[in-house]
Length: 108
Image (cartoon, rainbow, N blue to C red; front, side, top):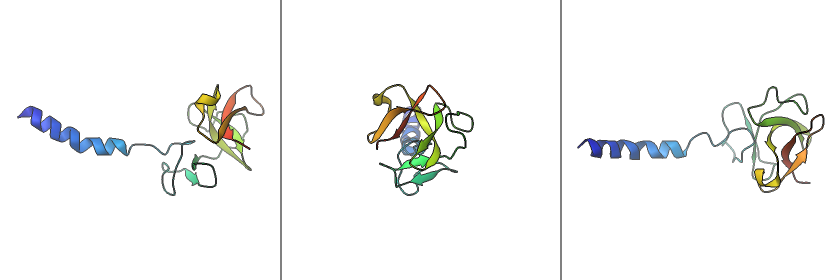
């Protein structure tokens, strides 16, 4: 009987896990698909959960593994990358001004 309850509990929790934090900074999004405090920039390819930042090349103020980079006309926290494989489609792994690091930026 205990196994049945564990199965029922697991099946009840599984859909909640699927709806987890999929809208973190730098991830794709739809109209309301970003975490609290982030804006879904639908003008970016695939949508972009945007977190603004103030100093290009700085990591301060951005989540871990992100860097403040110029995206279009705005400074936003962008995923750090080492190769093109680290970036989503329509984004390129390019150098960021003021640093030797690279970030996933919109392909121009």
